[in-house]
Structures are given as C-alpha cells and as structure tokens.
Length: 460
Image 1 (cartoon, rainbow, N blue to C red):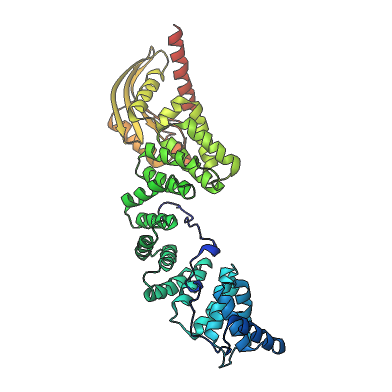
Image 2: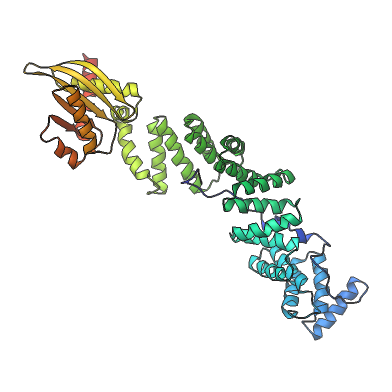
C-alpha cells in the first residue's frame, strides 16, 4: 500500500453488526428454495398439534420437522428455526423425502442471524453442494468468507451473486471490500461506487473507495474524500491520517499539520491510530523546522511505545538540535542561513587573524565551500573550508573530492568540517596531506564559540 510502509497501512472497515446485516433470505415469508414435503393440515394450530404429536413418537420425523421449521422461519424465530433445520438436515441426509438444500440453507441463515458463524458456514456450504446457482446462498456464504478473511473465495461467490442480482447493495458492498483486500482496485472501485449509489450513507465504502483512488494514482479524488471524512466521529481519525500523509508527500506541510491535528482532536481513538498520527505530525513539524513540537510528540510516543519505528533515533538526534540553535541551522536551516553560519565560523576559525572571504560555492543541500585569505602575525595563506551538512559518517571518496578541490583552487590547506564523523579510510587518506578533518565534537565547540562571541559583543 502506497501510504503506509506503508506503510502502511491497516484498512479501515467498520463491519456491520450481524443483527443489522440485510440477509436476503431473511425477509418474512420468502422461501429460500423449493418447499419440502408438508403435513396436510389446514391451519397453524393444527400443524403444531400434529407435528408435535408425530415428533413425540419419532423425534426425527422429517415432515414434522419441516412443518415446525416453516412456522419458526416465517415468524423469524431464529433460535428455534436453527435447531429444527439442523436436526432435519442431519437426520434427513440422503433421504429423498427431505429437501436437503432448503434444510441446510435455512439452518445456515438462522445461525447467521444469531451470530453463530461457524454453524452458519457449515449449513450454507452444504446447501451449495446441492445448488450453486442460488443467490441467497452465494451472497451469505460470500459474506461469511469475507468475515473469515478468505477474500479470494468471497470475491468468487459475491461475483456470482452479483450477476444473479445486480442491484443488491450488500452484495456489491462486500464484493468491493473483498476486491480491495486482494488489491483488485479497479474492480473494487466499480463495485463500491455502485453500492454507494444504492446505499448513499455507507461511509465505510466511501472510505474504501478513497483508498482505491489513492492506489490507482487519482490523488485529487482520494484527497477530496479523505478531507470530507475527517470530521466523521468513527472514520475521522483514519481519514485525517490519510489526508495528512498525502499532503505530507506533496510537501504541503502546513496542510498536513492541519490534517493530523484534526485527527488527534477526536475522542476515543484507538491508541495505534493516535500514535501514528503523532508520529506523522512530528515529521511534518520537522519539515517546518518546528523541532520543539516535534520532540515533544516523539517523547509522548516513546512513553507509550518505547521502540516505535525510529523514534529513539529521532529523539537522540533532535533533542540535541532543539537545544542548540546553531546546530539546527547547520543541519536543517535554509541555504542562506547555513551559508551565513559557515561564514561566521570561517571568520573566527583563526583567533586574532585577518580573514578575507574571496569565494563561496554551495553544492545543493550537501555542503558549502568557503575560500578565504587568512593573515596572522606569523603566516598567511589561502584556506578552503568545506562544511558538510550530515550527521552520518563521511567516507574516503568525499574527502578525496575535497582534496581535489583544494588543489584546483591552489589553496594552502583545507579544513573539512562535518556534524558527523569520518571513516577510518578518510582519516588515513589525510595523514600525509595538508587536510584537517573536523568532526562533530570540534564543530560543537566552534558553534558554541560563535554564541559566546555574540554575547560578548552585545555586552560591549
């Protein structure tokens, strides 16, 4: 998934409660298949009397079980219907007088209405061995496969159900969500859009459609939906997380910050979502150089999950930056601020010397070279300073490049200054050359000296 290392990313789907699912076969009075053999009686009371009389002498009487099952089914007495059809299905297996398809299908649907998914799956799966073309069985079994996370099976069943009943919203809904789970984004989007045409209030499907748009590269449409859903009490936190991530990737940092902050304003948000919102908000703050807020958020994350992603490393890095403005400028400041700082270091590098800067060149956001004429009471020379904006390890190749630059400019000596360290190979390379390597500890002294001199000038 593109957003979450994506991840990224669990998919937000708030499942409907079992009692609220529109099960096609549960409508009052609608048979699930052909009727079985029934008792020849005139009314309900007589049916109950005759069926119970026959069951008293034979608890597995198929006609009596079917008659009582029909009554329980029509009354939507799911507990009783389930027991009756389960008994009928088991006792009538192989009996040509029993409608095994109807018995198993109704047993499965009754169990599903009661939230007993294993029994429901069993009954519907057996029913489908008798008939593969029944919409109700295909839909309900497809829904159960979705709940079991067998998404390829659910797609196959729901596609067949959708062909049989193209206007059934719930079939399209779960077909869309199942396709999304196996990354069939175009098919998922088509099914979800049609489902939402039939049931416009389905926000979970709207959210999934937005994810499909994102995966298909239609960021504008995805962002439009995520932004719309940010205020939703259930989907809002995840929608804000997605919207903010899209804006962050587009380098629209202020918008990303607004998204993440809105997500954190929601109540009763899952702790995992809260932590991820804070993590990405801290990243947005770092992009805008608001290091204080970023460090505070990273500290909150570490208090909950001490080893969450790279939080320990980020805290180690940015706590120091937060306490040292000059180091912050050296590593993260704008190019102009960085160059100004490097000029100050060059001018005060040799105490009591007369320093004239003759050239400044910048290589992207990697380093700056400052060429200076330095004159002291004892010597004068041309010096090249290279300031490398890195906290990592500078290798031999980078130092060789600097040495070549020193020779090209005919400088007498070069000073390579980094906020990180230099490799052993780099240190060996400069041993017999007029190059000095200045690592982080020495750079920090220089940065602190700048602050000390500034305070002294103010005091004067």
